[in-house]
Amino acid sequence: MDIGGYKPREFRSLKEAVTALVNAAGGIRGASDGCRVQGASLFRYTDDGEENVDRHMPVDIVAYLEEKSEIPVVTEFLAEQAGCHLIPEEISEISASDLNIDLAETSKRVSELFQHWAMAIANDGIIDRQEAQALLRDNVGLVRILMRMRSDLEARIADPDTPDTPLSK
Image (cartoon, rainbow, N blue to C red; front, top):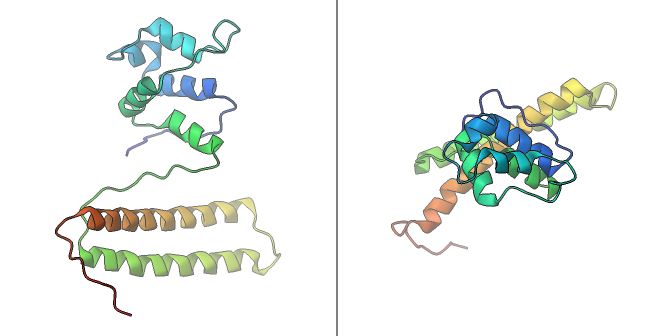
């Protein structure tokens, strides 16, 4: 998923997230193009004025606009509200050797993450902002590899051609 210049940010309300989604989809005019509702309705979904405070965008329109903009703004907001993080899956054909490479890469990345963490706290016992950003990049890279591995394993489970052999003890 290409999110271009989009930078996830914290929203204080669902209305703010919906407004950001409409803007990402081309503003009211661009978002209403091909949408099942007109611009006036989209405006009401983004307006937090007293008369529209209880009007919310239907989920099918959220899905349409997120697909159109290629940015899951509202979905990310809702995930954050639920205490979760949204991590895009990398969907690709992975062979058994690729899975083994991912396993080796995971081991390497975990080692690097712990090494960087130890170096960050070695002198003063504190992780500063710059160190935290670097550690977060390491962490996200590791999670992406694990998600790719998860997708591959789920595909193998669902594939009727995957051998069904018992685990040896």
